[in-house]
Length: 365
Image (tube, rainbow, N blue to C red; front, side, top):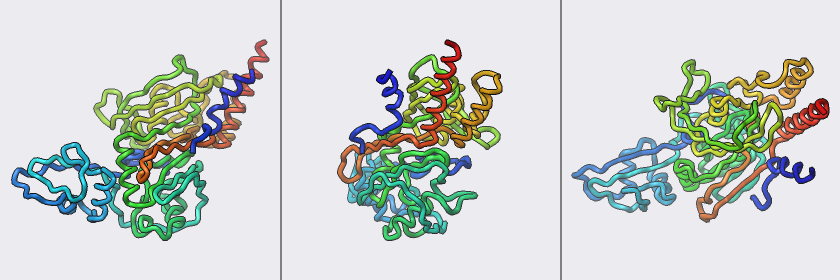
């Protein structure tokens, strides 16, 4: 019995040795923070340094930013990384990944609590609390993570000026908690952006969803795009709309009418886990936008209904936590992996349902 309890709690604490906005956006969870450019040099192209070539073709970009992208291996010619002094030749195929240019938006520095997990000269890793919007947007021009970062990094060039998302290469929804990485300089920003673009990061989430699973693990594939009413995202299984999205899941614990699952992302689309789980008829517990804030499984007994409503109060948000993140350090080249505890509200919900299941079994015995 003790061994079983130990296995159940594995996902409630970090592994040893491991070091947003609710409004629908046209941007993906990660790819909205960087842009991808492709060029083919004309047959009559004269020999020209690639940094000059790109400076003349990419809007709102500085030579220093292009050089940082080259140093980060984010400028490829004929599928091979090149340095900023590479000279373009006729017919060369150029591919570039860079963070989006600054936008004309004033950012107000605000002292906001940041749960810093790790920090060095290049990156900052935080464990974002639920309820914190990541970057300014309609209805959220202050009180965001970015406002807090601008205050925290007041002496760092990347966080000065008018860049509305300084240092960001991915985001979490407002009510999703968990691990995020922030770049502290242009080189790190471009290096991390390319990793997210190339899908070489390792991201693991814990979700509590409605219903039980026959299969203990599986993969959900289905393009994700804006719904017809524009209020949420949805899956387009035929691939005729939206963007390609893949989520792998593994059952961690059966809680009767709920299930705790681990989700691993291949892609980073807006609301990806929330949308994919709804698509397979397992919406996240208390996910108002995607229908998880109703009693979807269980009995008609008044006592059970009251128990579920009390559970909604224990976790007054959708049940999703970005538990871990792995990436290659921009400067050292070492693999960095960060893990986190589940937040207290999700832990309490799990314990509450464990107790319910145990009591229900006793009633049947």
